[in-house]
Image (cartoon, rainbow, N blue to C red; front, side, top):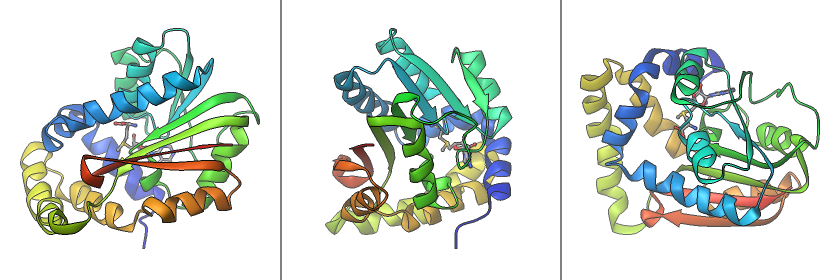
Length: 224
Ligand SMILES: C[S@@+](CC[C@H](N)C(=O)[O-])C[C@H]1O[C@@H](n2cnc3c(N)ncnc32)[C@H](O)[C@@H]1O
């Protein structure tokens, strides 16, 4: 069962100060490349307004601001300690709000991005509906999140995810539950066709899935 929003909020409040560094260490820097791939896709859509949901410490929002300076970026997150770091790092516009109930009018963004965030939300279908509400018709949604690679690598990967990573993360953050939760949430998260069907089911069209590094991460994109 998915943990409640209070648990997720407390996890990110606790690890906020070390989140950026620990992310890069535990993913061997791959998260940086994955976000840059997401920015390349966004660039092709030529948005003028973009909402980055679950912006956290602002990694994706900052990449978009830097690579696409003409785009008006708004970052939203419900965890103030994460947002505070995002602002300090240079994210220009932020709001502290729940992704499930965005305090924003309908049809007001060309593109909505969410990196390593959807997995943490309590109801994927309701969240995707809420994202579609704030996107203008025909606007683009991009989801970047973790997956589980198929085939022979899945076993060693799961060993890393469930046994090595939480212990190593505990040394870096003194917060093993946060990183045990990471593995559980990745196992629960819908993948490939299942995610594309979910997107189509809530009214998105042209859903595409793009596995990265054999499926350790996946980008999904679709039109509202
Ligand atoms: C793993 S971090 C991802 C941060 C950033 N997007 C990145 O690429 O590094 C997940 C973020 O989702 C936020 N989050 C989780 N549930 C949320 C919710 N219901 N509403 C808004 N933000 C939420 C957390 O506070 C956290 O900052």
